[in-house]
Length: 543
Image (cartoon, rainbow, N blue to C red; front, side):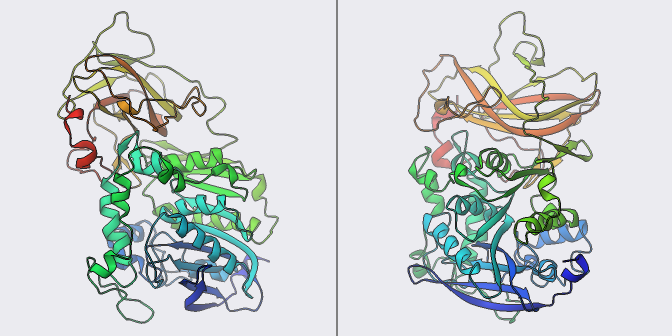
């Protein structure tokens, strides 16, 4: 079908369509489909953010920024009326011959039931919804999943269950490892995002509740109204943040919420963001590397975590992928390079196709820390030295000489450092930063907040390494037991610093900052913080 013919479809909107689960529960879906007769492929998302909450109502600052970046967002065939946070715009997909479905997860939006995000039941429901979508009279039997963040993380898990009608997935900036990517970075609880996300983005959309008077733009009626803390509502949902805090090791609870990536067989387009150290970045790369599918692609971009998803060039890529695997078009997608990288510059990015990740031509280069000169250099220090600092108030910087030639750093980074503490434990925050020739720091517009080149974390008592999954260029920790320190004794820590890409200009310097607390830019408070009082508030980390 030609592009002109494909865009001839009008759109029908079926609101609050019931989908019956295998235990009798009813989920409600919005279905947008071509007005033309025939059977069409389905793209869908299922989650807890409210299928009837307009992007601009629930996320006003992000909406305004997106409109500045993409002024034509609500033009050229789209009114923007049906835009929902982190999901596709039906008005841009249905005319091209796709059915778009957005389902409220159990206990959220219009779907009654017990609200239990990330649970096994939620993913079982997703299987049921996929199979329902694949067997309707307007469906060609092929279902693709697409969406950002929450709507990406669930894709990895449901794809591993292999629903028969699932044909392809596009997880866009979505974690795959519930423990390492999201809940606990290096064994340190990542609570800052969770504490903000739970009330604003989940509880506000609980079925029958709401703290914000969103209005359904289709009916004009409020979608919410009851306060968040009604006993009835409290009793009809899990306490996900409390559950997270009660599972500090990578135990069965976390494993149940992480996919068996090797079981994924459908084609995968995994889209990650270099500006996301602390949420999703690691998951998209691990998901790509470990997914069992023989047809998989990795696309890395820059910017905030939502803007690229809606930009025309990325929407075109999404559609071309789905045209191949949901419509069966021989459009050359399968000849595309498996890795598409935005090679980050200090003022943007260039784009390059590659055959693998990490790059086979990488020159793995050790840099050595010298505590006496506080330098980071290619040669080993002539003598041993140490540097002491207070974990909660001070830090130490290790700095390279100015780079004499333009140098690209793309791939994995591991820090090996000997440490000792006056306490029985320590948290190490490792921040890789870039300074220009005048000593001014280069700050990137990250997925969720301003970000340095990249970051890494490790709790010393979680230093145990999983040798079966560790590679020469990337360490993998077990996180299955606590091994306290003997105060004053030296220990070797291997810290996983999240993957990155940056072209370092001539005259610029790299700086490795080590400290015992979160790194934040002056005047720009962080969002992805690690300051839970039960996890970080006791004396063990104040050495």
